[in-house]
Image 1: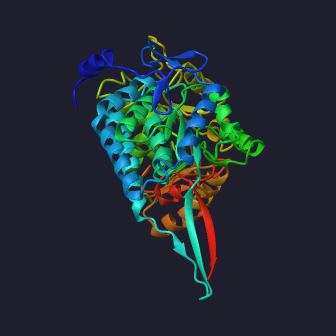
Image 2 (image 1 turned 180 degrees about the vertical axis):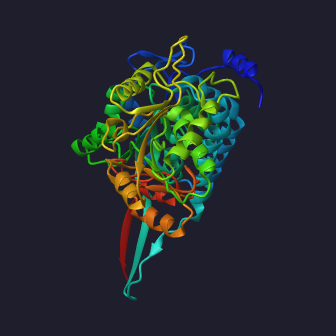
Length: 494
């Protein structure tokens, strides 16, 4: 990996797409409005980006609907769609450095993470779903000789995908991969906090051979263009990753409009449980630190509730705090940086408010605390609060920053009860040397994903999504492809 000077030089010469992408063309917003996007590590303005609204949503939906109706994409053979999407994945891989740089500049992610995970995972999501296209079969139902009963899957039609700012590329690919593979037209709405990489994806998709109107990108605000998409009467599906509050609103919009399919992947307050019989406390401590510090804690599956058996709590916390020097925030363009900047001032202020409240309510501050601003960068150090009651606000609400709440327990049954006492159910983790504890504990945890003796394991073969107010639907795997299709039964009387 090249050094920090290389990345700063590349940033200076980077060419940015700042227009919306509708019907195969980059265009200004119909209103001509633009919004600023900033580098959170420096405070510098990166670009002024087209700010789309209802008029642009109408234009994009019309283009997407026309493309779907004339079957310029859905009507292609599976092998043809597969070839285009594989080329799309190849182009993403070829432009890895540029895409990683856009992610780092736009939302503060360390360049090493964007290079090592985000860009490759984006290409992998597209290629995996492309490879699955011609390996999915329809069904013939078992009926008598007098009939032929067919069960077939067809694309939904026009899909609106609203994705968050913390993993702009990966979350987009998790939606684009299955939606495009199954023959839909897609309108992607990136977050106004990190729109630049999505617009680069539009350019690469066109270059790969996606027909005009099949893939559209509308940058803008949730209350303008996002709302317009959610309420649009000619959109068949809305898929979303983001906060639970917004997810609930989008479900309301789906019901108030045309009952469009609505798949939500929302917030989390994931419990990371360390049992007394864990046989590698060093590894568990290193993993617990990464689970709250990776991507500045701006991760829906962050292990933000650390539950430690009281029998090993003191020893474990000592090991955990010893991990934090390697997780101090720094210049995201330095390849040696492990933690970057918070995405914007609003998120920085929100995390600081949680830290301030924790310091003022009798908990024990083991590390970190309110940052000392020495410049324009939005940096917050890893912060750990211990001796929290399970019903403390810091232990119940999603903070979306590097703030860890530590709760003690006595025995696995109590840990499971604390873990499940949450509005959320996205992920959970369990460290134990007992196979019985591992299996029984993972069964008892009410979460969409359970990690045993690891955190954040998995790949494209595993579905991703949550229980309870962490949402519905699933990203990744063949289960995601099901979500973007209609099931049709055809009975042919012979």
